[in-house]
Each structure stands twice: as structure tokens, then as C-alpha cells.
Image (cartoon, rainbow, N blue to C red; front, side, top):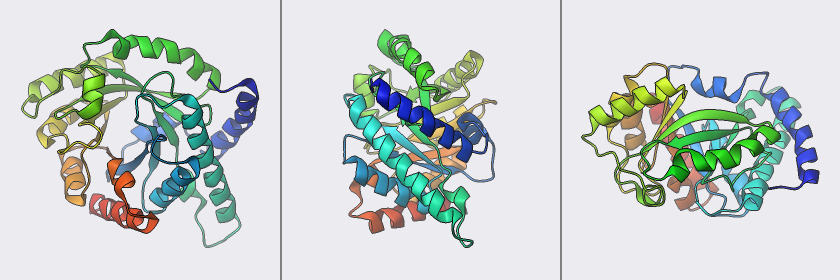
Amino acid sequence: MPNSAINMRFMTQRLMIAMRRDDETVLTYITKSGEKTRHITLIDPAKQAPKVAAERALTAIESGSSMIFVGGSTDTPDEIVHATCTAIQEMLELRIFAASQSPDSDEDQWKVPVVLFPGGSHALSPAADAITFMMLMNSRERRFLIDEQLRGAPYIDKFDIDPLPTGYLVCHPGGKVGEVGQADLIMPNDVDLVKSYSLTAAMYGFKILYLEAGSGADSPVHEDLIRSAKSTSGLTLIVGGGIRTPDQAKLAADAGADWIVTGTLTEDADDLKDLAYKISAINFFLSN
């Protein structure tokens, strides 16, 4: 875990983050209903240097992303996760300050939460605004049902970052997360099963249900599964994995996704200009 000097530094930064969020918790921000599906850019800290990650995050926000997830790889150490979160937060602070000095700029554009999407209890950082505190509900392995959560909870409490109670389901094709997480994959025709999972998540008190097809999946979560999960009230639905095109994002949104996550799209972009074009295209389709 980051040392005490880093912890003290980020106690101050946590106050700055809380102030810029205008007293709205990250959970409230995520779960509030709106007319359009919102977009999340997932940045894997293992795939680029922190400065590059921060530049990509700012480009994504400028292109319409409403949240940044940091995480993905299962073996990324906390030092790298922390450095990435720090770089993103520092650039956001600079953008907010610059916007505050210009009457033509909108500070609120940059008041976007940076949320940990961890591969395990090793990938934490006090520089994040919140963490998806997840149960991999269709895992056969106790580690992903409760053990990683037990290890991480004391640090999350110490860092005072918002835990986001999340039920996590890995759907076909599943990819690496399905393999590592030892998940019984939810198949495209398992609409009754995903409904049972969504009801269980709501009864457990989870506020978020995340349907995941796997990083870099060759196909996204089937829209019938999204519709079935969406029919359970009281859950905010996040859908990710295999979404690369505006059409795929639109299908998920029309089926009921409240949030769309893209990650591989960011990694595969030729440069920041290409990234801006791709994310802007997705957000245009989500708005129409």
C-alpha cells in the first residue's frame, strides 16, 4: 500500500476532490437517472505511463466521457495504479483551475470522478474518488465472492474513498476476466438467469449491476441480457466489454444500459485525435 506520506498528501487532495464534487457523492452521481446513457472510459494503468493515461483521460472527458475507470489488469501493483490516479487527478485540477479563470469555460465539464475498477485488493489508491466494490456473483471461487473484499475493505475505509456496492456478472465470451475469475459464463439466451442475478443483487442491497463481456471481447453483452437485467428496479446498469463502435454502444443503450464502458477502444486509438474522434462518435449516438 502507499506509504504514510502519500496518505497524508492525499488526505488534502481528498478534501479538494470533495469540494469540486459540490457535496454530491460519487454513488449519487452514478445512480441518478437521466435521459441519456452516459459513457465511461476505462484506462488500464498497466498499458501506458501515468502521464499518457492522464492525457487520454482528459481527451476522453473533453469528448464526452462522464467518468474515468482506472483498472483492468489482474496483476497491476498498487504503485502503478496510484501513480495513474494521481496523474489524472492533478491534470483535472489544472483544467478546473484554468476553466475557473475563463468566462467562456465550463468548470463542471472537468468535475468527473476517477473510480477504481480493481483486479483485486492489491490495486488500490487513495487518489481515487471511489471504487467499484464488487462481488463477482457468478464466480466459483470464494476469493472473488468475499476474500478480496475482506482484504481491501480496511484500506478503502482508511483512504476514505467512496465504495460503490456493485454486483459484477461476466457474460459470454468472458475473456481473461472470466477465466481468471472462474466464472460460470452467462450465455446470450440466459435471460431468466440474469434476471435472477439482478434480483439477488438488488436484494443484497447493491446499487449497481455491471454486465461484463470481457476486455477485448469479440462480441459485447447480448441486448436480451441487458433488457432482462434492466427489468429489476433499483439498480443502475453498467455494460462493458466488446463495445468498439457507436452502433454497439447504441444497441446496449437502447436495451437499457445506464452506462457504457469502453477500454480497448482507448488502447487501440492511433493517437489522441483518433481517440477523441472515436469517443465523440459514441457519445453522439448515445445522445440521439
